[in-house]
Image (cartoon, rainbow, N blue to C red; front, side, top):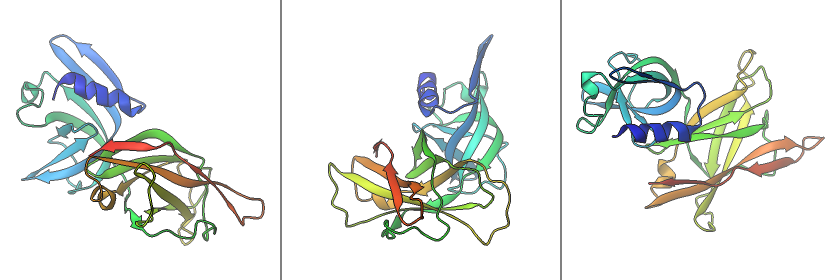
Length: 236
């Protein structure tokens, strides 16, 4: 793994709060809001990042489990003896992870709900952010929502019988309020990770899809105004 590879991944993600600085004798880079999938190898947890980069931290939280989806802040110091090979031999870089945030995980569901009917407690989505990541068949999705006091339930589904055009799958994202939960201010930016193994098993070289979501309801809440993201393309 070369330094410019990790830089390319970094800027492609368009994540905020990412800084880097040069110092004498090497390079030390601070990275924030970086998505990854935790995989246990032998007795340690490695974090797989976008672009097939892998990082390891001896200080990673003990409650990080195999296949957890996370967002991490970390410092990468190329002057460390452990990083003298830039990760090419060991297959990973050693970093200092300062913060781990767990991302809710969901399975991609087969079979669609009736897209002409508003679900009980259904919530519109203000926008889908451009930033995303596809790591080990997990798709990290970032969405913007109006202010609310109830937590949200996310469900992403598709029709396995869909006849695709140019191999583009149409996925539908439904978001509902969890009515039985206590009220509390909710974050306007929500992040979730969806397991796309069901879809990737159907393809060989690439996965192409778009996500349809409810942008608005009509005045008497009887119809959904659906919109769609641009088409996503990921090599497999």
